[in-house]
Image (tube, rainbow, N blue to C red; front, side, top):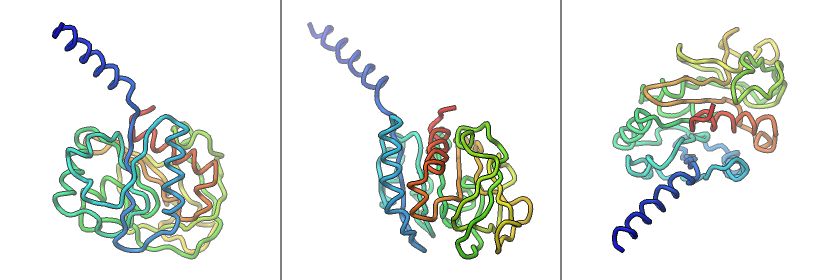
Length: 237
């Protein structure tokens, strides 16, 4: 009888693990500028999870960055984080998470985060420098075969806040560039990326500069773009 119970429990455990939903963590702590769009971005990502079969936890608490806690997540989303958001111990836990095959999604101000942590800079792919006033601009979707961009037009015109970068990584697979001739205030020239992905240090990283405005999180094209980035980060091709 005991053997039967043990076997039943093992089968139940395997079954539960096999059908457990993928889970992601949305992290939106700000130690600098606080984007009001976080308030609409968080429920928008929760809704994406409900519609696409993954669970979403949300936090602004850096103490959640422990090895034991992070291992339950297929990806961690930095939603417009700013400034120094993790201490040294938490940084180490996150590095271990990525090295173990974890996924990362950076949204908008994720590049305005952790300037004194070079590993993070390489993970997210760039560091913010400045931005002009919000305005319309033309985006060129240079890779329409990727899960986050295959639904987009080759030229995508939209209103947002457009970042200039003080540093851009050289190992990025660029998905979208901005046409600096289509707006005022661009400072990165013809090679001015707005979204990219890359494999980094054992894990997967996706970044989109888009998403400053509240309206972004009601825009079907943007939401599908963000969803594709999340799906890449969690390992879906």
